[in-house]
Image (tube, rainbow, N blue to C red; front, side, top):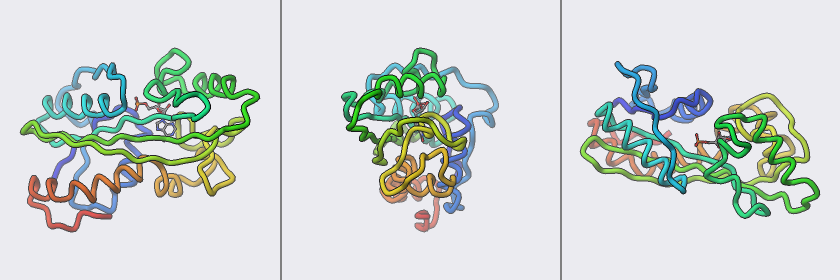
Length: 208
Ligand code: IMP
């Protein structure tokens, strides 16, 4: 069964591909493989749920393919959950990871409670108008300085609970096992294997 992944973020696409790789019944399609480039989705909802559902629905309606979307972000406890839904544009310019990390370090200067979590909302849209969503989280702390070159976004500043190194320093396989995206996608496969099986006449062997 074909499943469109509604993201232009190549890092997210790679992570989703790696996490879903064991599910051989799914053929993942990137936006770049669509016959025409779809219009940009304006992420103007005030929640990750709203943006994930909007991305999945808009791309599903254009492609007529079952579509999966991810909206995700970092929530820092002592900052009242910021940057949250604004994670990609925290410092102003959308997708400027380095500027976002510098701003976060500035906001965290002198703070002793550095607890934070990544949150990922996965939405699934069906061509017949139905949609679903659920979330996954990964708890950790914000480091005092950036380290590592792997991953993307706030990975150089995020140390997951139980580890001494940032996501950007840890092996990609470790991140793809414990991340908010991995947790959400595993939950999605478990919760939605029935609808996906019906849609694609798949055997019920979808769980990785
Ligand atoms: P979105 O494209 O609106 O979902 O924005 C997600 C933003 O949240 C990214 O630009 C990153 O700043 C941050 N983010 C989400 N997931 C991750 C991750 O796995 N690592 C680091 N940053 C992330």
